Length: 197
Image 1 (cartoon, helix red, strand yellow):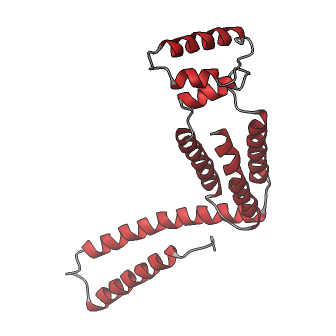
Image 2 (cartoon, rainbow, N blue to C red):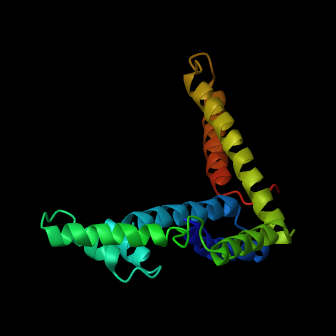
Image 3 (cartoon, helix red, strand yellow):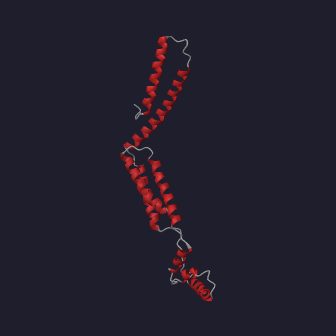
């Protein structure tokens, strides 16, 4: 997982770097998505590459036990006396080497360093102020405001359609129709709005 996070920090940092020059409002969400994908990739890799008993026996033999543990494991279910003696010999050698048998639980320091560097790069690029970031923020605010205005116009248009027009004159009905068309055009214009102006 740590390696996945360190690797996913590279595209995340690139996204944050490009957001300094090009307006891209959801850059922080995209960055978080990169890190989530890194965690998912790390989990999948950990499940695929999980250690089985044979690999664990080989690892124990690497401490100077000369393939005793692996042989004992492979012949674990064989009842013959020779294999029982071999298992007894392995146990005695393991007890002799017990102080030297150290299983590494924490990931290597270079993985922590790579992860810390990628996070620092992402934070550095994320915190650099720029005109593009301001533009992206402004466009997002304008888009949200435009959606609110669009809802209000829809409500007004709905109220105009429901209005009783039986008592209106022909000119008033024509003016009402023009007003409805104008509101529809305004709603269409709000969908493509880019700035407050």
